[in-house]
Length: 112
Length: 115
Image (cartoon, rainbow over all chains, first blue to last red; front, side, top):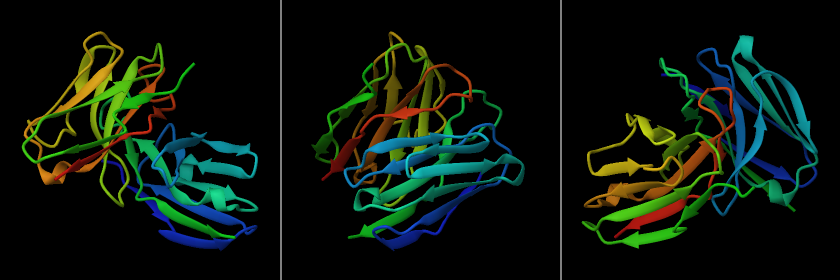
């Protein structure tokens, strides 16, 4: 099946700093999602981004499908950004319904 | 409308007991997925429903795991004779249509602890 690798595994920031999280995947995909899992375990949709660039407030994401990677940018980080960030892509394996394969996540800690 | 709803939020059971976890997807969503998330890991696929049909159960770890969605809306994941290794967060997700080109929306999960 498809492999998904995220980097860095851990990231510690001071409030107000910017950061870039990376997601590499081993096969071509036709969609990709970024999620934030907060300290309470809730998995929040950030972006559905098969290709191109999207922005939502302080967050933006870019997927370059032909080069099999996606980037998540966090600007002016806040303590509420802490948590685990996952990217996920559909593992086709001959199916059409898009069961997701997740990366191992990036653990982000933002200090005040 | 409302998001994906899961219950209970937390479940503690003794080893050997049976448990049932409920998922109420977003109204009208055709596709429903169950994932298992072990501590410190990303979620892993368990099973998929398209309406009431279970089209993929390749991720279910053993025959003690059983899922159903009899009327194409609410789904139940049942684990029989629970073992300690079943301790995990169980996440349910739904998407509008059956294709890959739809985002999946996740519930808050059920945290299962087996003593």
